[in-house]
Length: 201
Image (cartoon, rainbow, N blue to C red):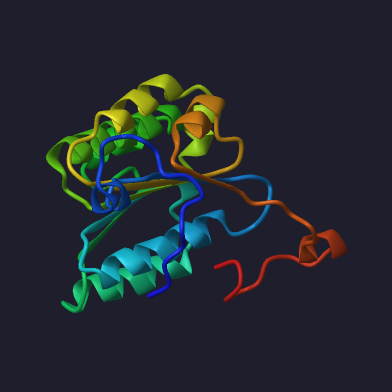
C-alpha cells in the first residue's frame, strides 16, 4: 500500500497511528465536474473496508437517476462489504411521513435532512457520511454553516464526512481537513454538447 510522508509532523502528543486514524471532514467544491463522483468513489472504498455508509442527497430531484446509487445499493445488499443507506431530499426523505413530505418546502426538507444527519452522527450510525450537494443549503442560508462546523467538530467516534457542492462557505472550508476545488478547464457543454448516459449519470 502506498504511504505518503507528511511534510509536517505536529507536536500534538499523538502517535503516528493515532494521528493517521483521526476522522476526516472532506469538502469537494468548485465549478468543475466530478465533486459527487469523487465522493461516491470514497463510498466505494468505505464499502470495501466493511464500513456502514450513509448517503444523503440534498437538492437533487428524485427524477435524477444517479448511476452510483444503483451500484452502491447493489453492493450494500451483497453481504460482501459494508452496508449502504441512500436518502434523497427530492423524494421527501424516507423517514418522513408521506403527508408531511408533500407539504415540505425545499428549505424545510433540507433542514429535516440535516436534523437526521445530526441524529445519525450522535448515534454513530455510519462510518462514512456522504452529504451530496450539501454546500448549496449552506450557501443559500437554509442551514447555518457555523452550526454545521460545531456539530462536525463535536461528532463522536471515528466518523468521516464528505460534503459536495459549489460555493462551500468559508467556515466549512476553514474547518475541513481536506478541501478539493474542482476547477473546470474544458467541458463538452462549452461546445454545445449536453450530458450523456454513462458520463453524467
